[in-house]
Image (cartoon, rainbow, N blue to C red; front, side):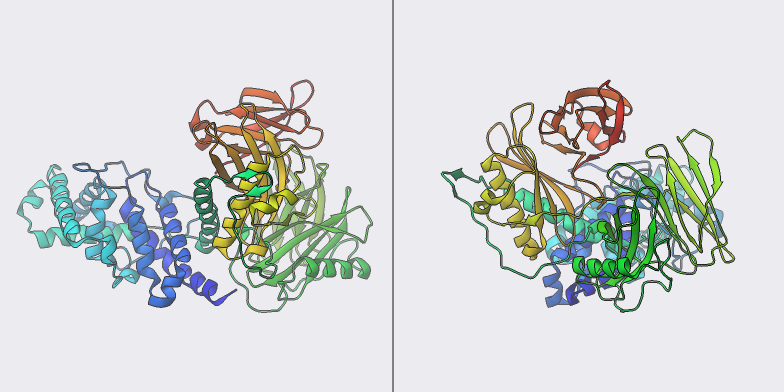
Length: 633
């Protein structure tokens, strides 16, 4: 990890919690999401890290970004709410709150509790930008860590802030005065005591905000996605002209060494030492096959030259469908976790999926996942500490079906069992490790497939002529537009040779829009780029993050379009028809054609932000063979 990256990671680890508390006080009772606000503000600091190197103070940049993202204050308007939508702490992935030195409300006198409860209700009637100047006058009410953070005048006009603050104090008084229990106190209390009560209330509420878990991977993912969107916005404003083989727009980028490809959604904290990931032996039916183990280590090092630690083959075994192996090692950006597979008995296995994680705690953890090959043969694989005493599997065919429990047969803590493909809605694993009970729920299923074999992005529209689509016939102008986009992305990110691209499809949709679909992998992300021309012939594009590195190139469903949104599907070989489904109801169907492509209009744009939108792949009789999710921007 480079020094700036390490410095940013340390900053996120130390500042995410106090910034989240400030975001909560700004957003409670509104539709704003304090967790999302926090992640976005921290991501914006990463893009301005060169400023930090000059000032040495990233905290003001983060607070300023948080404030700049607040909705504009409309004249004479306030934001009221019931408090149910704005509290980011209600999201998943939170830990227990870290208490500040504020008396718990149940330890206060009755009248004080009433006053604070009313003050908090009044606070939530203020618009976020009305709250900002009150908080900035004593920002330590959110967290002590924020004390002394100086916000630049560019984002805080002193005169404007004073006017807004005066209005906010008046609004708070008026709101509390309407309550029969507190109106007399409000009328008889001076400004100083009134402000002290409000600030004590805010300190109390900030203390209840749970701490964010793993903020750094979230921020890194947001940096990658925002960078994609920013590049898309710039690229959309440039019309790429292709005529007689000459391209009017040209983007060049310096050549650098190859950068390893990393999935942003799985990026973990830095691991600096060079020892083994875990002190476990190699297990499985081929654990003593030195030939396959040496070949696995060589293939792993060839695929991942960034490896810093000892390469470990923790499992090599034959299953009922294929031979598989689990290989792991430390790297500067996390623990590499790689699954290899091949025919039963083969010594020549290929990497089927790789992820970045945080490693395994050998005392209390186990590794459990589902692995499915391209034919759908699924194996449940469990690696637990040697000496694990028992394992029990609980499955449900549907969410409403009764649970089915069975013992999982293991050999020295390693177990592999074939499970029915597509017939398990939920899976739970209970294991007894020494004297500790370990439970794993919602186990993931990864799809084993050949490694991503794209080509180095040419980064210049002129280089588009060298690219070939896997299916369909791309329009040369739209393809050049997509290549220009990847070049702009590389130029902004500073890692041109780290991007590989694959043109999955090109052609026209049902309303004759010329489209090119490209999959892109760089050091931070795995993304789908959809480029097209709208009815005015203006170039447009959207990017969708692919968070699971095992997602195949087909079948794949994605959104595109702005004013006229559509959902498209690229079927796998053999797929002949597909249907758009919303909340279990089929709303449209179409044949996939000879290139495996179909698109559907989205009659209600709210579907794209609601649960339940999916694509069904259909059999010859119209029966549903498989349901796949839809990537959205």
